[in-house]
Amino acid sequence: MPPDTDDSDDDLDDEFSTMRDMLQELITEFAEEHELPIGALSPLLLDLAVTTRVADYAVSVASPSTTGLKRELDRMGREVEHFLRSCKRNADDFIARSKDMIREAQLEPEDETGPDAEEEATPEKP
Image 1: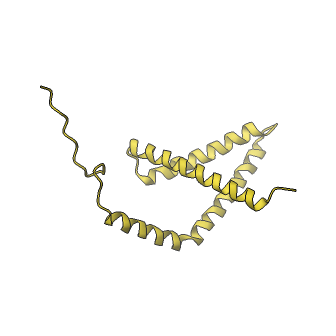
Image 2: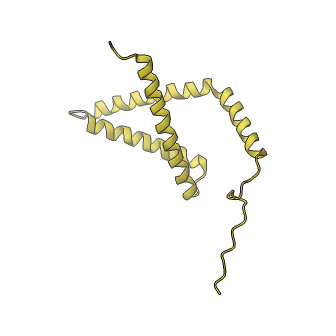
Image 3: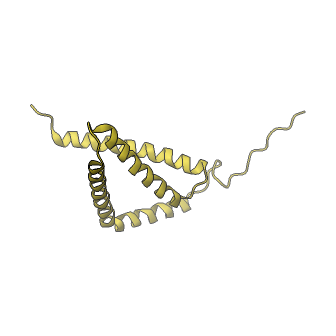
């Protein structure tokens, strides 16, 4: 009996989401560590996405060619366009959820380890 493709797709979606969340966490830590504004991440990540796609093409085909690479980049462009169209379709929901999360974050009291927390005094040596 062949595997249920819906279950396989769900498993792949779950794995993709997990990997995306883990990468998001690493990127957020990197941005904070290097004091990068959120807007600076997009061009860095876009450059990384394209260069990794180019490198993947070069090592994954038996005989890489300029024409083949251009076709691969055209495919990537179509995938990006499809993704952007999807984001545009969901823009209303995204903005509504974002506003709710921002409101909730503003209502939550800062915890002791928050950015406005006072630094703990270091004990003085005798």
